[in-house]
Length: 315
Image 1 (cartoon, rainbow, N blue to C red):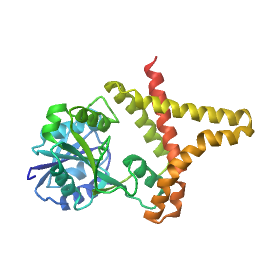
Image 2 (image 1 turned 120 degrees about the vertical axis):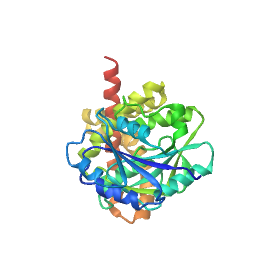
Image 3 (image 1 turned 90 degrees about the vertical axis):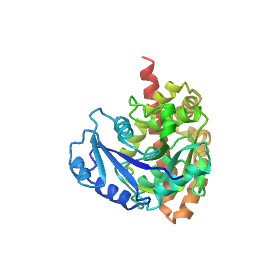
């Protein structure tokens, strides 16, 4: 596939990262590409730093939200292949080529994601976010179909966007899930290529991680309501019910802790332990044995976000 490439970056208050991000994109093949940065109301020196690169086509978008910035980038771009990247990551030198070449695998493939590795490989919280966000097992490599391609590294064919529409500017999260649903409803495939690597600045504290996943939960409900997808919400409700029952039993009488262990703690412990051991072996980090605990924090935060959104919509 010999088609022109446009790399689009929505920019908001990323003065610490944007120069390194753009520099890595410039160095990555293919060299014949346009780089578009859309500033979305930054209040720091992000715009100044990004616009200083002669290789960058720089624009401003005053409508709040990354989706509005991405859509502005689409309208200003000239490429047939569009790759959206977050403003706080660096790309591997072969990342863009890997994404481009993946489109050759099948005419049905119109959306390709890259593997978002943690920039800080020594931070347990950051690594946990990587695992949970990407949603694939450590022994899974190559190209495979996924439900959602995260927008931090999101390659898509322009002709597909022309058919299903651009990013939903009403969504401040889960916009990737929404767009992938629209593409799949048209019979297209969304896939991940683990050889297309980026290194992303993930959350490094429990608070930041919890806040991010709480917001994901809220936006996820809005996206599902838009598409009338109720089965996923039911799974969360059942999980929350188990959690509440287990907690209530322990509060009522500590002797119920064994029962709670078997109906709630043991199932998720088994579920996560298998993959956790694989990650420990792969990355040779004993600290990763704590993954299940961090993952549970993520699930609780996301579930509370879902519950909040559901209750708010019932008012």
